Length: 454
Ligand code: SAH
Ligand code: SF4
Ligand code: F3S
Image (tube, rainbow, N blue to C red; front, side):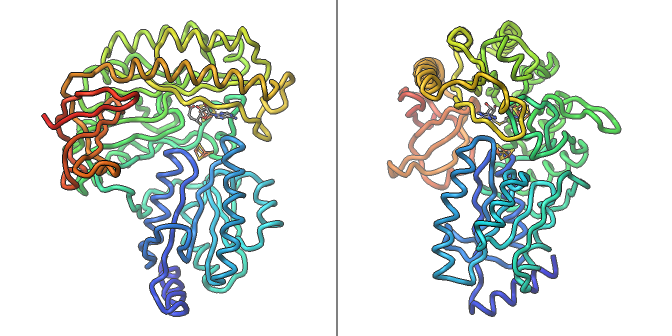
């Protein structure tokens, strides 16, 4: 790190001003949390935060979960190249999940010669050294590790907002859903030690954070492989007990590992937000089996029913993939059936995207794109109709909202998030940002409320 501070100072001297750096996140919450670490490193090194891609150093934290994430990167690179021609001192850094794919790194090396630094998910903590080497005159610095080595706890972090934060509880994934590239680019599942997690949460609370989002690809399998085994339900209770923390969320829950203990903790612990994201992926048992999800349609329905019965005010959301190889109209009807029966408050719907190296990519019977598009449109229509009926069912109640922003479109109004993850716009000024206030939910507008301070 000292080396980077020196090199940054030399860079500043060359430019004749404090250099700026901009970190862009292309992926999920985990990717966003990594970006906060990158920003922390850049800040400690002496960079000012840039507002956009005109910054001197542009870091793109890539995602590769679906093909369109990759296309987005290559689209951006063309634009960055023309900016770099105008400003030759500009540096372009690529990291994140897509850089764990050898073919993509080879393509960057070959075709995008203006990219200065490349690293992956496993060696993020080496960013200071890699950037220092580039600033010190090395031409192109590429370093990607195939597998994780040690877990580095002490990285600086610069939070996006002062009042809430993600906290990693595990890294990687062992589930190998047959369509998914995450286990290949994030490595095997590793749980952080509970004392390290709790220490981070206590520090965040001392720093003014009131809402925590516990992050893992499958939080429900947290604790496996630790010297002193602990369950996710137990960890969640301990996080809730940290003074100053008022809200706790978590992401993502795999249905196959969601325990009755967890449901019990969620039901009795008021700090746990009334929102559960429970990806179902498909409603067809046959497709679920081919996806290697290890639950059935009936199993998912029973679990959703059990959770809703235990916590009636909980909002349930999900992820659904359309067009997995071999999906027939009957399979798709099963998915629609689960959506109608569970009545999700909202759902992310995705068109299946073949990922190189995953088992599903080489399965026969890939579904024709026009068939998939038709199904996708029908599914989207159904989830939106149900979501708009279901998600605003607290109309007329008064609930606490965490104020996140001023409402850009309406001066004198702010935007808050309810525990159940629904947004509400109401009267107030910027001084409310980061505070939890009670709001009466007066009007339902599709997927959000208009309210007033109670
Ligand atoms: N670990 C989480 C999230 C992983 S990625 C989980 O298991 O739920 C987020 C979502 O992207 C997944 O839930 C899935 O719906 C979707 N997804 C993953 N791989 C995909 C692919 N190849 N094509 C389309 N959608 C995919
Ligand atoms: Fe991918 Fe499945 Fe792991 Fe989620 S649980 S990251 S979908 S392999
Ligand atoms: Fe994308 Fe990596 Fe997250 S592939 S979805 S950024 S774990």
